[in-house]
Length: 306
Image (cartoon, rainbow, N blue to C red):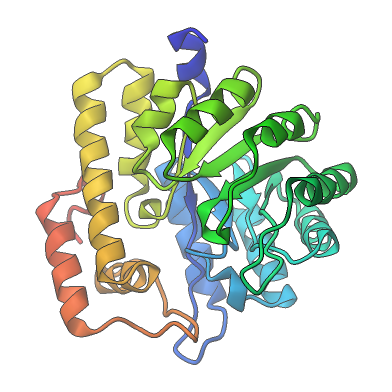
């Protein structure tokens, strides 16, 4: 695919945090404020994800509220999509998709199956699962292959699934670069491929993919978007500088506590972050101090004056 065609389709998304109060309740005011900040940053948004969004703690009612708020604050400004968590059955995934559709979401990710007890589904079982879900999907979808479930989907199956008209693209999160290249080669001529996390962001673009998903956009959405903007403008120096900061930020935040410390840093800076929800616990003051030192050392323009 020619560079210009790839660049025109490039984008990045943040997997949004879900702010909670100290007692574990959904903090709707903080969530609304956070959505407004992401919209101002110009970054695409996934909400309710199992990692950054603490999706495994969210009830149906929680999802209904965060979907409604996200649509109100983001739709028409930046892409807004539902993410959810790994389901045990096709019915669970389909129910989630209908919830997203009813709220007005533009699209939703389809997570890989987690059949439990450390077992991995066969390719035939994955084919049946994705086929059933995609056929019943009431809105556009993005199938996901993610290392967290302990297996990877055969690239041939991913390419086949991507042919369905309601499939927008594929989210691919796996350390094997040959696997990533094979997925991109089969999917991206017509549909988008994004990698999970920024680490493979430039690799994905080099292979012909469209960009990356990240958690770092919760803190620095404009920085994450600037990687893609510089890429589109063929500004190599700007792209490399922005990307190096995103990767350093990613390593530091994950090393000090992941989404727990991201929320703590946001709170300290006077930005909407909130608390983690149990079983996650707030980070220690020492981890927060080290994380703040990292963030301040990067001189991020969007955090000036905070």
